[in-house]
Length: 136
Image 1: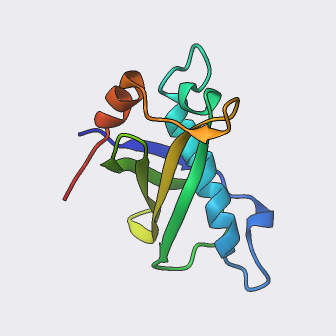
Image 2: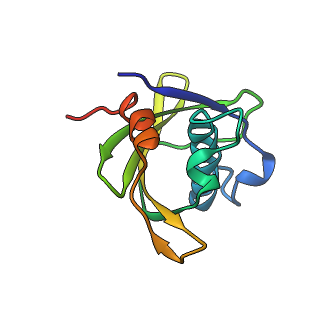
Image 3: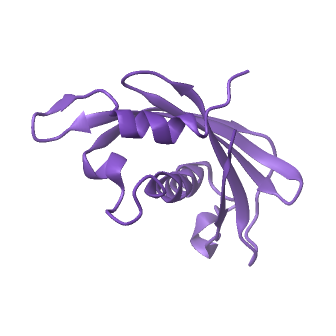
């Protein structure tokens, strides 16, 4: 199965008063990586999954080590760890070189904003996410 690697730049403002990347900023870094990942679904038409609408259902982050500002991007590796008819779970590992700094997951659900209700994943969305599906 494939994994997606996003090389995410760190910003000076990502640090807190203690000089480490703030826990809230991790969610922004993960969001940036996730948008880059999902954009691969339909790059010529924009992001098919987000264009039709989606919502974040849940985030989970395990902090494993300090991450401090640097000029080189941080590696965020992503894969799909669960795929259901109406949700997809994207898992991440944030690494500073060979050292893992965090492991995280985001559960997302497609959402029809015009009808104001959840929807099921389309066949095209399932096919895209299946390429990255890893189950233990």
